[in-house]
Amino acid sequence: MSAPFSRKHLSAAGLLSEARRLFARIPEQSGCDIALVDHLMSGLALFGLKYPSLLQFENDRREEATRANLKALYGIERAPSDTCFRERLDELDPRHLRPLYKALLGQLQRGKGLEGFAYLDGHYLLSLDGTGYFSSQKVHCAQCAEKHHRNGTTTYYHQMLGAVLVHPGHKEVFALAPEPILKPDGSKKNDCERNAAKRLLADLRREHPHLKLIVVEDALASNAPHIRHLQALDLRFILGAKQSDHTFLFDWVEATAQTTEVTLADEAGFRHRFRYLNGAPLNDANFELEVNFLEYWEYAPDATVTHFAWVTDILITDTNLMTLMRGARARWKIENETFNTLKNQGYQFEHNFGHGQQNLSVVFAMLMMLAFLVDQTQQLCDLETSRRPRCARNLFTVPDETVSPASTEGPSRLQLHPLSAFPHGYPTEEARLLSLATSRRKSTNTPGIAGVSKVSPGIAGALDM
Ligand SMILES: [Zn+2]
Image (tube, rainbow, N blue to C red; front, side, top):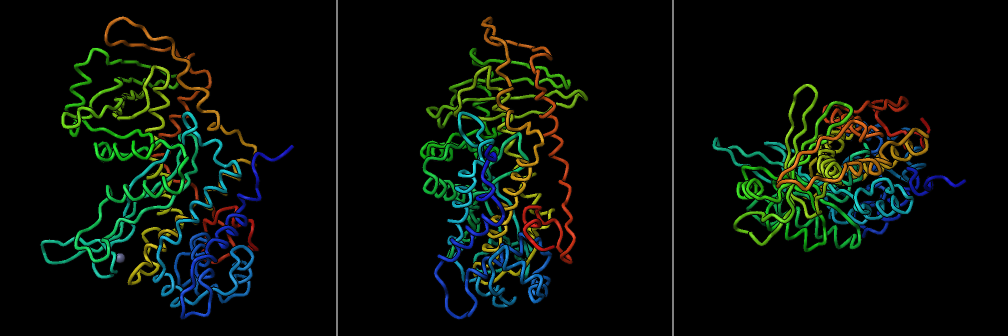
């Protein structure tokens, strides 16, 4: 019997070998006798092995055992010195790192690692969100965004727009190339998240012309220009919508006779109340731009009420309410499972390994996301081969298809479904997802390399530790 998917392609060694192959194609710069590919692979090792500082890496690279490990897994012939490392990466155009994101996603697909991630009609959920990873009043580079304070001081900072494939039933997330939010060369104005989203989505569509995606974003995204851009790129969407930003839309839904209301109850004691309307105008200024509106209230057994509203281009029916709600809420995984992991699990996100004059900070951020992508793939492989039950894989064969036919009486209808409508217990899974929002992952402490912990088991297993 064949394995569920190929370990060869998705092993740490397989992914890092692909990284080395693509890095070796980047044009060499003059002035250093150590190959650029060794610099870049050292960058991946820095984050993959969770080094707390460049100094520690600098010290360890001189030890024979470390050199052997760097050679064995990362193919590093010679690790560069601290100074050479920073100088070389500072000169590198970060766009040279983009092809590796595409290649690793391709490996994941070929290795069938993304099979369980298709969410709705073969589409993957793509969560986008911006985050800051550097801020200083002293250290800065040519690309730093600037905030000028009234007292005459300036804060320099870097942000990026992250893009990760998420699934409500999976802890793992898979990063696509992030887009820096900076101050463009020669510009006096800071860049903004909306412009970064335009670039990110256009690049993504060019690099993945056939990838079926549902973009999930916060309420900042539910504006007409962005929705038109998503439509032009053939991207589906579920976007947050706030009543304060969309008074016209909320009033329209309230006043329209076709607005439908459905309430579901689950065995964990939660009630899920939905209100929806297909084909509503986004706002009065963009009356012709129709969206489907979904509002949701979750009533917890402890009387806590959580409220969300979204706009989507996916047709809303009585049978996909839970699916849409869960997909929309999976957006938080970019915060909880991505940025927080990068901050708390040894990747040293927000840590200053050196800022450089040109690109170093951005190059480090992109290498860190690549190391994270390798680790997440290892985590998925470990789960896949551990024979533990994967509740997530079957999540969408379960949910609200069990909802009984809707009543046709009246413009608004209330349906309360019995506990037996959820024989597979998906509300428990939902409750677990909610608990993830406040819990951190347990760290994987791997002894053997001083000061280095939280190395992914896939990488640790390939090393002599
Ligand atoms: Zn900077």
